[in-house]
Picture 1 (cartoon, each protein chain N blue to C red):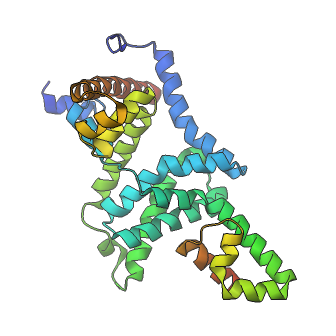
Picture 2 (cartoon, rainbow over the protein chains, first blue to last red):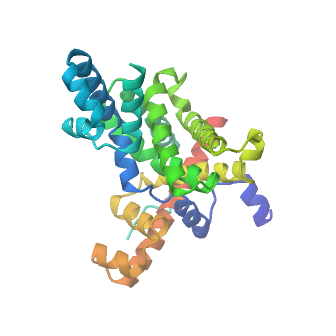
Picture 3 (cartoon, one colour):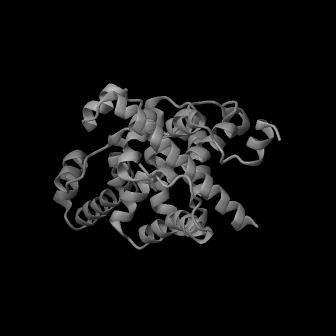
Length: 94
Length: 202
């Protein structure tokens, strides 16, 4: 059996170089991106909270609409572009 | 040092290991669906490199586009997790979702071309390679912390022996020999799990 045919039959029989290349194929994503994705559930809850409060309190609604970043910051959420966009859309659609 | 590379483990142990790896995606997905915040963090951590690599290597998106797609993919995962038919099929579903989101991004860039033309040449091969890489990273997760860290620093983070040595308080010569020993262990693990998959497939 040739080395090539062996490789084709057993893709898991890899050399150190090949394993190293496969490890290198998945470098870490930027830490800020990962954290923002991990905060998604909290951001969603914060958005729901802001919208609920805005329905009940017209003054808060005006204040939040004029400064979405501060409204999110008050809820402890980093106002990333994606979260801001979602909050803006939800306000507009509500 | 005896790393246990010489002897083959019993077959049932190999199968248990594969079952644990294969089952853990489903377990995390189920916990996410139940609202477990720690599980969501774990899911993002586990698949962040994969989604990032599909965006940047598979579709060669610029940083700002890749970041938007990355966030959009995880937002869709969060919302659509309940529609996933089988928790076991999370990986292919995530790959397909990321692929579609990348294509949507390219299309939004003003290109009115068929989907096939929007995909960069060789994208299927790249994605297949990234699947292999993800399997290797899964196997790495089975290694002791010191092995996992040194392999990740050297290969995935592209750190030099000097940088790794300074971070881990090791002489450069020890860094090199530890990398080699850890690669041996990883190779043995991959061969075991490969054997186990063949056994499972009959």
